[in-house]
Length: 398
Image 1 (cartoon, rainbow, N blue to C red):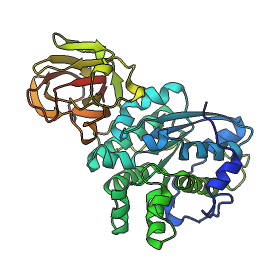
Image 2 (image 1 turned 90 degrees about the horizontal axis):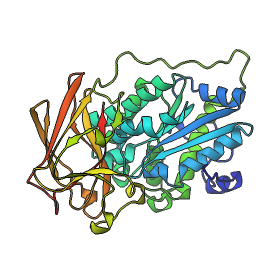
Image 3 (image 1 turned 90 degrees about the vertical axis):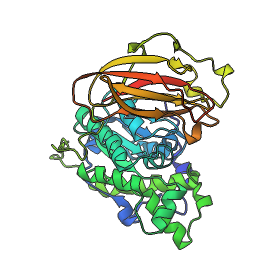
């Protein structure tokens, strides 16, 4: 169960932001973009007095920030409704990882009525995604969500880091926001342009980056986001329901933005691989490894190897294959072959893994013909780190 903030605390946190306690219809202008009917979740909450709300994202979602504030907004707006709230934020993860773990972390828990997604910051600073990668991950999440429940309501929120802030202040749209906004427009999904609102206020001198709280916002910054989401609800849900009000499935566009999106993204157990000498499947001996470890991953069995030349094969079906792994100070490079054909080597080392065992998803091959394939991995002799290690939590297939 999520510990919710009392309404009084929420009101105090939102103080200074018009619309926090009594939201005006257009306090935030075009930084709150309403699309689609956005009525299905509200109808279920009011009439059936139950509902499930999921939050998918990185550390901004995982932290005690905007998420519990939005939970409080909902429980106060629908006091008779029995809510289930799903916290599916994992620090450092991007929309690619989100698409592959969505089934396990969210859909496995049953029908979801309202989904909040946040990946603009991590797709930028953590994954360094290009536009295609941003779209493939976000569109994959959306199509999985709509396939599981065509009546689901979705909100995509754009948080902000210093690069995104400077880009907006220079009059340009950051790549990750533009890509995610393209997905939202294609599927008629509302968006919350928190980044744009923050840039506007900082430029006007009514807010500072320090007051906002930075990449991981302070209570004041998270309250600003929550008040923008409240305004979206107020715009869409201000009129009473009528006897004719009914839930309506959202149409699924027949043509995706990117046909290589991860709409069929899923995790595969590493035990399904065939491996020999040099590999172990179990919980790593973290005590013997240099670098910071996150408790979330410390008890997960992983498929591990540390010596160049160690090989494995994996049979899978789909159009793409990768791995969700932790890359530490000793992260290596793997040589890749799919169906016997060489693919580019993949360097597992990351800027954030120099002193941390860092979670990331790497793709070994995309755009494959649909059907069965065989992946072959071999640890390469080259490395940009202190070692040659690979530690796979799950394979990721689409």
